[in-house]
Length: 62
Picture 1 (cartoon, one colour):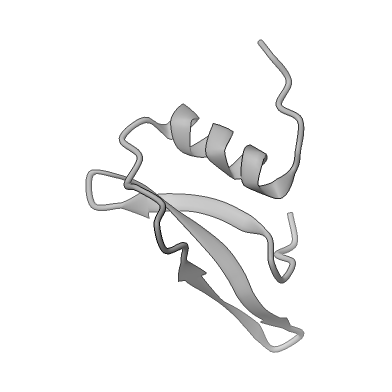
Picture 2 (spheres, rainbow, N blue to C red):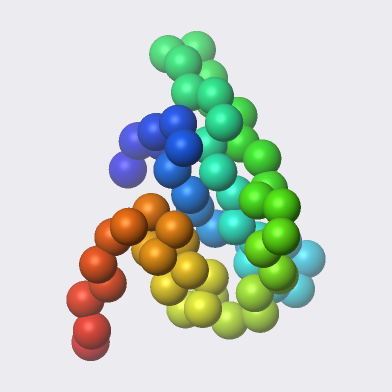
């Protein structure tokens, strides 16, 4: 998936997962910053659920 400015994603951070937002996306590169106020998630599914919520996406139930 291509990054888009303002879109959220999660990535491993220490022993958990942190939520980031794409801040600047150009054809030459991109940068992101950690979202202030979001906790460190210790479960991957928890972080994924939160990212879907922040992006306004619907998560399919398995």
